[in-house]
Length: 228
Ligand code: DC
Image (cartoon, rainbow, N blue to C red; front, top):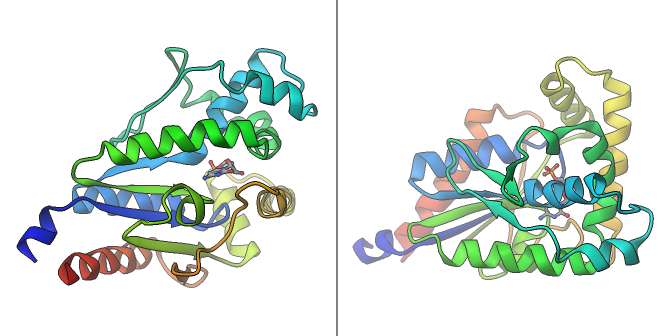
């Protein structure tokens, strides 16, 4: 067990939007002294670059041809994860409604996924103490050998309510509709869709507080470490 505690631990947290993935992942990483990677931010960053450079989002071949061009740098500090494209801090611009509306189309393109997946694996391999990686396909595709896999879910109503609060009271029905549409696109794409890994622990967060979800994931990681 002493040796086990020193080994890096890889934690994959997947699930649709509004399930509390980011808040949970950051808090678990901070609490356990692990690095943190927001893979959605990487897909948003490449989408922001496509939009900023006039690439036609409705043309997958144009997206594929440009997929290798932007340089994307992700920080892994849970207290302030950095995201840069070609040396520009894009933490703000990647959260606009325009990027949110276009990110599913960009992230469905196989060339984009190959590029970003490689980046994610390199970052995870370099995290000496271990890392919490949040996304949609981490447990299934990016890091299938992760030590702990969690799949967070919640009712569409709960997810929309959380997202609308984050967006400072955006209309609930519109938020719910946009969220359900994005999840359907992310789950329905051919390459590496949003999916629960067979060996992931599913946690329905509908009736749970954030603190309860964090505690649940921390316990799963600690149990895994104790097994080693
Ligand atoms: O977690 P998020 O809402 O910031 O993610 C934005 C989008 O990025 C999401 O709608 C789908 C895509 N994404 C993905 O395809 N694979 C991941 N591992 C993470 C995000």
